[in-house]
Every structure is written in C-alpha cells, then in structure tokens.
Image (cartoon, rainbow, N blue to C red; front, side):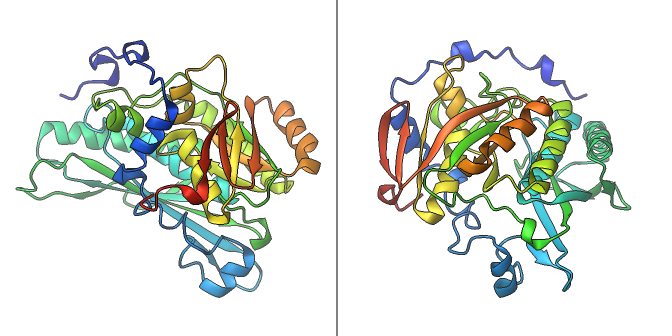
Length: 346
C-alpha cells in the first residue's frame, strides 16, 4: 500500500541552514535545467501576449487562440507532476490542477474543463490501483471546487513494462475561455514604476522546491504548502481583478519561487525589480519556496487604490513587494546587478 504524506520522514525547515549569500543561491539555480530557458521558452519569447500578437501568431506561441471574430479566446495549458504521486496521489493531483488553473486565471481565462493522463503505473498491481484511485479522487474534487468539467474518461492510463526507473507521473490539460481578447493579461512587466504585489500569504515553506533539491541536494521532502480553500478564493479574486482591468501583469509563483517568477516577468522588456522581503519569513523561503496559492502582479500607480480596495473587500492576504525598475534587480536595498547582464544560459 502507498504511504501518506504525513508518514514521510519528519522534515523541518529549521534543519536547513539559511544561506548567508542570496546572490550565490541565485547564480547556482540559474544553471538548473528545470529553470532554464529550455523550460520557459514561451515566457522568454520575443513576442509578448497581446490582442495584436494573437492576430499575428494565431496563438501558436502563447497557448491562447482566438475562436472567432467576436473576440472570444480559448486558452489551454498542460502540466505534469510526479512528486509524491505514489504516496499521496489525491493531494498531488489537486496541487497540479490548482497550479494549471492558476496559470490560466493569470491570463484572464476562466478554466472550464480538465483531462488527465497517468503514465508509468502498473494498474495490475495493487499500488497502481491506489495511485489511480487517489488521482481520480483528486481530479474529481479539484474539478468540482473550480467548477470545471472532466472529460469523458476521467483518467487515461499508459503503462508498459521495462520503462526503467521512471516514476509514476500524472499529466493534466486544462482549458479555459477568455470572453474578450482585450482582457488578456500576460506575465510580462510593462513599465518602470509600476508597483509589484504578492497576492497570497508568504510562507516558511521550501518543500519539494527546486531550491531545496538543487541547492541543498535534498529530494525527500513534503509537498509544498497547499490549501484548496485558498485556491478557490484566489480564483474569485483574480476573476474580479481581471473584470475591473486592474492588472498590468499577473504570474503564478511557480518553479524557482518568487525570485524566478519576478525574473521571468522582467526579462522580455529588459526591466527589473526592487523588492523588500517579509521580515517574518525566512529570506530563502520567501524568495525560492514554491508554496501554492500565490500570484505576482504589477499594478499601475493610478489603479493601486482600487486594486487594494478589491483585495481588502475580498479579505485575501497580500504583500506589497516593491516596484518595477529600468533593469536593476534589488532585494532589501542590495543590488544583484541588471537583467541584461544575467548569464546568457538563463
């Protein structure tokens, strides 16, 4: 039988020494293949997602497709996950679907449907049944909470013997609709001086992060912090912010944590960021942890009051990080250089 996440060996962030030099962590993680441009070629493409770019590219590089002359757009994203799928398949599947939904919501899309594919499980084996059953429960629960339809066959299987030490993996595709192409919001910072906010709560969590595995060499850790109630709330907040046109950009905090999310938003327009970390959160967790339920947005100064009013009214935690710069990266008043001087391998 599979074990649950709570039965994993005890893990505490207090056992992980906090690096004295954040710059050393940044340049170490930049050579991590999971954080390279190979995995983020869409985010670093020369073409920013805009209504005009859809007309020129038919959405080939954006994952967004214009359906007809009415301005309705379809958005689709595909994600894969293997962390803890064998020991907590339901939670792992809920995290994966939440992560994909969050990405579509940042674009301005409303997620509508989800399909799932399980790779490398032996459904003739008891443990394979446990994984499939847990994944099915996670799929059904997340789809219900996010008001999404599930494709006719809820879980599709792919198994063949002799595949070697390949861990069981679940792949999901989520499809959403954007009512008007003028509502599309990209992940890219647009203008120097815009204010940057983190929607969601900072957390002393580094579980299953690229930072923990690549920098500290620890792969046996719990799943990242996750609360599906918070994800559902975040969904409603993002839909309202898009409806009121209050966001200049929006990015889900993903691989590499907050720092690399900010970097991916800065690179396309050769901009940067000047931020202050949360004094109540460990700096490495704040910058590189991959806890769920967090969004980075930048907001034009003349829309900031309305933006803050919406978050306050909807009672969602948020944190003002700082502002977009002309190209310099500054954290807690210390400069890490300029985006155009970053290693070309990133």
